[in-house]
Image (cartoon, rainbow, N blue to C red):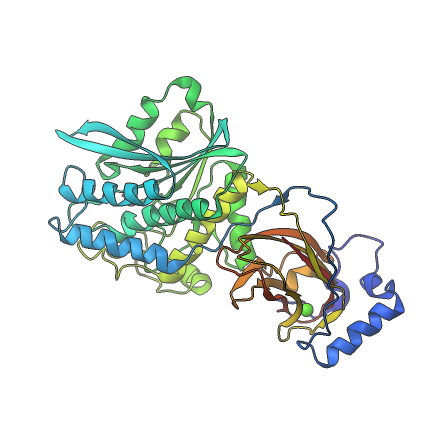
Length: 461
Ligand code: TRP
Ligand code: ZN
Ligand code: CA
């Protein structure tokens, strides 16, 4: 999305600073280096590699990882198999429910969570909530994420609510893979008997001492986030939580709407009722997608967001992969952001490339590389300091590419981020990389008009 008049596009920039000031201010030598690189954008000059200790070690905000869709879907396949082996559902009081609890609990226990199974009784049957705590963080600031794990009796409940259950499970496993040390304490919950009227979550809230309620700084609810004819709905509750989700979607360029399909119809309601700030995502149930919604989100107007809502066809075929993928990443983004996850950036040896590389406008990706040698073993966590000059940084997508060829997304494009330059520090989990080899910063400008160049970058570990 671009405006065609150059002057207009700069309106939101800092007043008084001309659009091209960054390039004009450049020393001639650097500007020339940029021009030379522009003739062969991805063939970088020999990297200028210096070996010296990092001077400053201020904490860097850790970006949430991409949640692998394949992992989320693998959990859905397991829920489907569990239902198939237990009379076709995972409903409260049925064997398929407890089997679902045990599946999720097994994954969490193996990943280092402290799990608790809370029992309650509803309609003459025992129900179970599964609670998982990630060790550490401030016990007086708890960020909770929850999804109901039960289905209705008529089917396997893969969208409702295998989708939310799988997304928060995979986010929890990502927390473990990252060995995240957030400022807040993280807790995940899988609720029983939601389909009987929010029974499990209400039981949890009612049995939480009043003092502990006040320690829950936020509750995020995920119920139906892979609807086949998906919409992108954000709960309109706590403003900070709501904005966190909206920001994520704005970064993807996907518009969202406020969730209106029955406020209080899921497990956030008991939390909201006692004053806990709540929020969440929803991709739609039995309401009908309008023409305007189909226009902006795709899918079929005049049809329900989920035609299999509460029926036997809520199977693994009843999932929109794009919606599930985006929403799963949004869960992780919210957990990372709202828990104020930060890690001290790694210190160690600095490898840097000071050669300018021109980034072609709305063109192919360019790279700048550093070569690491003489190290042994892996590089589980690296720090990347980036200095990119650009007149509209929202155009810029940045990846770190490890020696294995795996890309780690540092920054997405954003049509609304009109600020200049990307001067940032990223802390990146790279658990499967070897230290030695060629590491690349890969930068692409994905929208016409504004341009820039890689000024320098450095890798530290
Ligand atoms: N499980 C919920 C229910 O059956 C699904 C639902 C409908 C929902 N509307 C919602 C979930 C709005 C969250 C928000 O009621
Ligand atoms: Zn549900
Ligand atoms: Ca551009």
